[in-house]
Length: 182
Image (tube, rainbow, N blue to C red):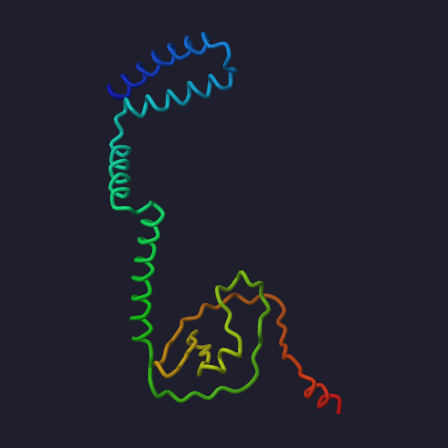
């Protein structure tokens, strides 16, 4: 035990005895309130006696933030946005490097669709959006390729382990129902 900690502990014990005497004098407080008060005082006194530099530096930083007119929440939001912007720029560079122009692709055949809970995926693109833009999936490369007037984009995909039953479904319109019944 260091000398500083030993002095701190002795001072806290002396102060604790004084607090116990004070709480015994105050009969109107309940025992629970007195104990809580003693704990709070002991904690604060140990902080002061330790001389925590972190507390001082945090208070200085908080004062600086308040002088600049920013709240802690705004400061954290700005830090988060700047880190997101850096990640976006990194991803954009990776995507630009992965695009190959002029590749002919033919894809035909059957595929299985997996029905999963929505919380597994961050986003699900339906066929409607894929018809509006030129989009196709490259299953072997685990990529979604999207092309529009602004350029080509490659989105990396993550395979989800498929253990269980698969259900393939196509919505039927009234026309297709009548054609099937004939």
